[in-house]
Image (cartoon, rainbow over all chains, first blue to last red; front, top):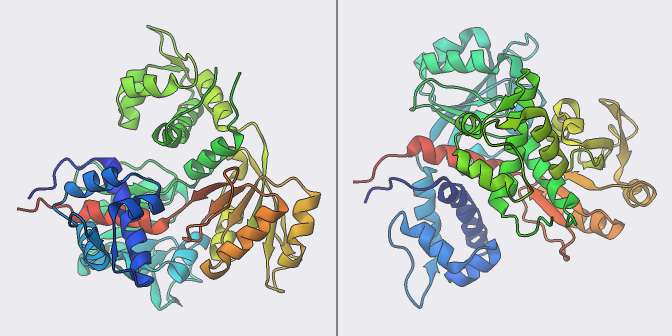
Length: 212
Length: 212
């Protein structure tokens, strides 16, 4: 079956399903009903059934879902078994934090290299990953298969670095720069992490008072 | 008017409106039509009008929106003029990154203090903000007004620290720990930043192929 026209909202819920199922799997839970899963996640059972129906038939009337199977299926849909290759551009505090703490492999990515302009960092290794010079970016990308670049660079250089990466053939960007990047063609995917959007959502919630 | 029953999807779009309007404001744009704003944001003009109608009447037929006014109104709705007070728990790489690079004030927050267990950090100052001992957490919270705690601690201690903070009276949490925290009462707000969810969304998009 084709999985065309899956809405953005459904796509955004998939990683949550995966996270909850992974948690259940780690706790040794073998099967779960859509009601119980919905209760945990704060959504309705019918929402779950509807979301999953975009991708095929899952679960069994009266039995529910086999946790391991559904986890594996959703993982497969998300591409966690594709072993995408990833590089980090910009080894400041945030770049460091991701290199040292984020489990890329759990999301199906291998972090192969990081790039920076600082002579103090170039040639060093962080969490087993080499830090290379920005001068070698194009050569590296042409010689290695790179699916995704993580952008943890200052916003002033975000677009120009993106342009270099796109020219070199990178088509996925995990963007922490708070800049709305443009890619020029529809094969390029940007996933933006906007910390401020998240904090403002919290601000709204704690400010929320009925306005009389 | 009351702003009850505003959907989660609308709330999540508000910071985006704010970000785009702020950008227009910085570029000196005085007014914008809902069509142009929609084009920029990749949503329809009618979506914008519908979203904003949850909060009152904005814009004028034939004129569009006054950028500064709408920016100020949405900022007000989001609570950016409330000057919420915020502390950071855990000064590892990510805590450092937020303290040094994130503009809390732009989102209406003042960062007053950070807390850690490391003797090397306690007593130091990072980006003008003092790092205090976790032993002094309850005393500090009882003596200062604290609206939000940013959690950048290891996941093993995330829930126990949350419990301490809730007991001390903190009711807003910006949670980077990847743990689903529970609060016990509905006055407590959690805003989770799940890096993995974001990266998995990107994985889906770059893996996306019609399944025949």
